[in-house]
Length: 405
Image (cartoon, rainbow, N blue to C red; front, side, top):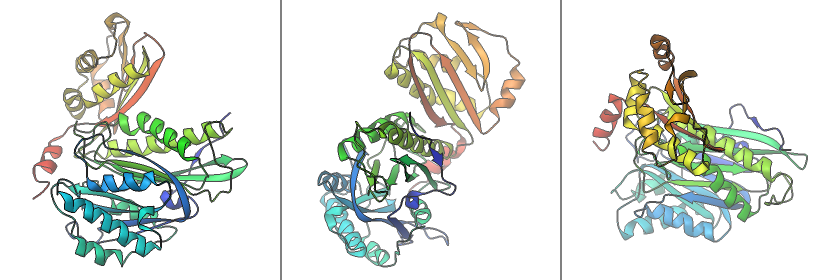
């Protein structure tokens, strides 16, 4: 039986023992008194590490360098910048990502190949390395610096996204914390998102990679804001073993608990990203049950959450449930119209494929809340999945029509 998992009040990536973080304003983003745009993470001891990255065939050299360093199997820290993506800038992008790793390594007192590099922001602009050199020297990493790191990752985000959970492994208290950024250009697989997690548990590398992939598929890869994917998506997890447990493997008694904790953390950060989608006023949650299999459930949930017509209906608090069924029908999932049950924010709209009379104004009122849910029972099998998204507003167009100006 999996151990109890609890969220830590005020938790962040440095809630895990042995991890330090810090950030500064280096000048990569437009100045404001409270802005940060360059951050560091340091583990006091070597980590096993795993990562999941963009599936785009056009990817930032920052991603390439991170993948190369991960493959060497020993990680001590990472550097992240916001404001500039370091993508589509030719060979210079790779050189700059390598230099960023070297600068961070020198600041942290580790080797260059032990540092991961992550960038986010405008595509097609070279990293201003003179600003990064100067900024790096100003960063102080501390035990509560995770909160600063979460702010330094933000681009169009309106608020930082961070959390931590705690649980028992071999009778020892273990922590798993994380930070994430992402507000627009978000659609599986993955999105304009960066997410970093850290745990003081000892975890075997192969199991860590498998657990991260499974957690990503159930969380970040079920998130959609606008149907666009990015060149820079990076999700990494570091495990430094400071808790003193034996390394968790796929066969360990605590394997299920660790996987559950990682998934809970990722789902929490996913919901926060959806809630903070560019211009969003409402979180959309699409739950599909009774699909033929998990793959069908995910196809259906993602398609409904990504539908522009569903998103605009949510923005207008319009219970136009026909749009949900239309999206379901084109999702590629197996569907029998005569078997479908549909609930909108808890109100049954359809049962066994037949519309159910409902009080329209009551549903409109429910849809004016901060979260709108669509729950579908397909009654074809055991597959289930949840997808997250947000409504589509005029503000989204305004933000993205002037993003580089």
